[in-house]
Structure formats: C-alpha cells, structure tokens
Picture 1 (cartoon, rainbow, N blue to C red):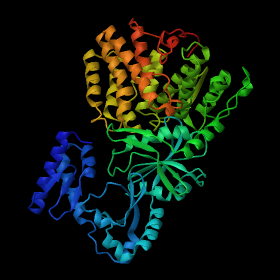
Picture 2: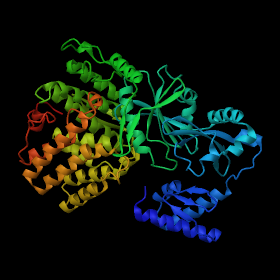
Picture 3: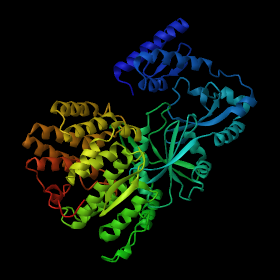
Picture 4: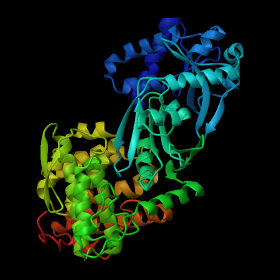
Length: 584
C-alpha cells in the first residue's frame, strides 16, 4: 500500500494532529491508533487515500479523516432510528481486535474470511452496531429490517468480458454496502441481468466494500470464470478503501463457500472447488464443447458464441470451421477480448496435440491468437470510428472501443509474447505504443508487471540501453513477494520472474548464462504446474512456457544457441520454420 517511509510519515502526521486536537499523543501501532480507553481507530482507509494523493496534501486528509470520525454516530439512537437506518454489512473475519470483540457478540460468520454485522448508515458516517445497540431494537427485528434496507441500497453495474472470455457482472458504487449485496445475490442478479440465478448458483468475489463481481453458472464458461474472477479478486483486493476478501466464493442455495485455499506461510493462493462444483464444471464444460466437424467441410462452421477450442474436440476441429467461428465471434457482441481468450485457448489446445508445432493447423492457431491480441489493443487505442484488423484470412472493420477491462497488463503481455513468437515487428511496435495508463486503468496489478512492460517496450523500441536496464532493475526490485502483494508468491517466483531473468542475460550478451537461465525457467514452469496437476490440464498455457518461449525467440534471432528439446518450447515456432507460410 504505502512504502515503509510513507507509512512512518503518515503515523507521525496522525500523532501530531491528534496531539494538537486533543492535547494527548495516542499510541500508534501498525495500522491503528490505540486510545487509552481501549478504543481503536484503524488507519488503512486513510492510507488508501494518501497513496493516491501528493504528500504535501496529507495533513489535510488526516484532519478530514478524524473530523469525519468524530462527527459520526456515537450511539443512543432510538429503536425506530436503528430499524430505519441499519443495513447488513460484510466485514473481514478479523475486523474486531480481541479487546473489543466482546462488544459485538451478535455478529456471525457467513463464509470463510467473512463476518456478518449490522451497520447504521447515517449521512455523515457508517457505524457498526454494538450489542447494546442491538438490544434496544431487538436482534431478530434488526436482521429483517437490515436485509430489506440492503436490497434497497442503490448500486451501479456493468457487464464485462474477462481476460479468459467469461461474462462477468461487476457491481460498484460509493456505498459501503456494495459487496454486502452478495447476501441478497438472487435479488441483485435479477436486477442486473434481468434473469433469476441458475440452479447451480454463481461464482462471486468481494475484493472491497465498494466492489462485487459475479458470474452465473450456466455453461462451460464457468471454467474461464474461475480464472477471471480469481485474478480479478486478487488484483482488486486492497486496491482501495475497505478491503474485504481476496477469495473466490461459490454462492449456491443461499450459502457462500470459499473456493480459495491460502497458504499463509508462502502467501500463495490456489482455487480448490469442492467435488460437487468440480463435477458440475466438468459436465457444463463437456456440454459446451463443439461437436466434431466433418473433415475439411465449410458447412461445419462453429456457431456464433461457441467457445472456440474447447478441450474435448478442438484438436480435431476443422481449421476452416474454426477460422469462420473466430471471425463471427470477433464481430459479435462478445467483442475482441472474448475472441482473444478463445484463440489463445485454441492455440494452447493445438499445442497439446502437436507439441513441436510441426503442423500447419498449430501455426494457424498461433497466428490467430497473435492477430486477435493485436486487434484487441488496436481497437482500444482508438476511441471512435472503426479500425481495420486482419483476423484469420479476413480484413475486418471492428468498432473502436477505447480502453476496456479485458485489455489489461496481463493481456498485453500475452499479446506481446505471441507477436514475438510470430516475429510480427509492426504489431510489436503497435503494442509498445499502447498507453501504460490504459493498462493500469483496465485492471490493477503489482508494480513489477508495469515495470516489466516498460522494459519490453524500451528493448523493442531500441531506446538507450541505460533505460532498458533501469526498467529491468525496477522490475526486479518490485517483484519481491513482500512488495508484490497481489501476486501469489509461487507464481511470481516460478513463472512471472523468469522472463525478466532471461532478459537480464540477453541484454548482457551472455550466451552461457542465458542457456542456464532458460533451463531453470523451464524447470520452474514444470515445477509450478506439476504441483497443480488438476489445474494444469485446463489452465491456459500450462503446457507451454509462453514468456520464456518469447525470450528464447529473441535470443535465437540474435544468434544465441537455444536448446529446442524442451517439451515446453515448440521447436518449429522457435526456429521460425513456418514464417512466411501465409499472409498474417
């Protein structure tokens, strides 16, 4: 959130302000002010505001923060006032320190990591009710009134397409109770989607009090939604005031079940669906797979909206049918972000059937993924009119969209890596001119991700080597697990760090060190995915080390000797054997 010096500065400003305001200097430990009477004033929300504000304005923020707290409700409301103003509120399960927990014994856990409380919403503050407050109005009466008040709470919503192609509904607003709408998800879904929740329920994430996202479970895209929502929750958690939970939940039959397993020692996250949900996901995924096409017949085109490249049949899918399906998908309401996800999946599946990249169909799938990745950012850079994009063997005019949620830093890296493997110099230059601020706005990510993007841009655009090195150093310095808190530690160390390590050896011109680093990167890739044997069968690019492959292509083209015997590097793509086979 804040650097260590910034956090110390904020604590000092807070202590000085409270000394001036009250004539006493309270004790400040960690992220809270500890008062002599046992009260505790948390500071994370203030810290979030400070993070986005120049430090010269912090004293004003500190003053406003404590003025708001002191002007808020202090209790003593009538029973009627409590019934009219109380709303259900979800809190982190560690919201109450041990010394104050006895004042909130009515609260109850609703899911792993989440606590249900009652909050009084007033014009100047939101206050969690104590046991004494509850006694004045009656607990049963308050639960009923608070639920009705929550349903009436106004929020905004959007339908978006996640990076893997899943349709998600995001719910947001200034209210402290947006995430708490998960407690009335059937009513929320009806209001946002116009339909009742399916019998299977929904996947839902609640990264902060002002943000909720969900995916109704009704078809095979639930597999992609697991990845999209899981990444979304980790990215948005602690990115603003009111951090709630980084977990992915399954809402089913009125209950929320956490699907996220957290290893607190390694600070790693993994998704572990219960057997009931796993069976359901497999069933829906199988039902969504396209029927096998008749060989080489144009009549077997993929229906619009079909998940191109579904695992069961994509390896045998007729290329002409797949190409037609991709074109239709790109021109549909699903948009280019959804198409990029579908073509990446198809390229991954083709590779599973052809690990050396020896077949034309495999090269075609990789080119299509490269084309749609480039098209995604070509359409988001433009803000009006249409944009010409080549997808498969067609030139399409696609609507300019401006920045969209699916065009984020992770999607940019995939697009850059794919264009590198396909040796698409013009498309790489186009990608390097995508504004970094657009990527930041599309989805939050750790700072090292953006420093790495700047490294790749500086390298490709042949900026001074000192600039490349400085960006690379910044990538290394900000990719420590203690700094990069949004990214699971093992993914960071075993997957994300490896391309940067390879870049270090590449720009140093050290061929032996590059060969050693490449071997280590591939070993780390195998280790990461072998520890996730279930996820490795469906996770995108688990069977291919995309980042190291791209760096290996750069090295190969610079006359570095590159070992092409690894099962994670398709040697015919590495060696440019298909380059020029057809126009791209």
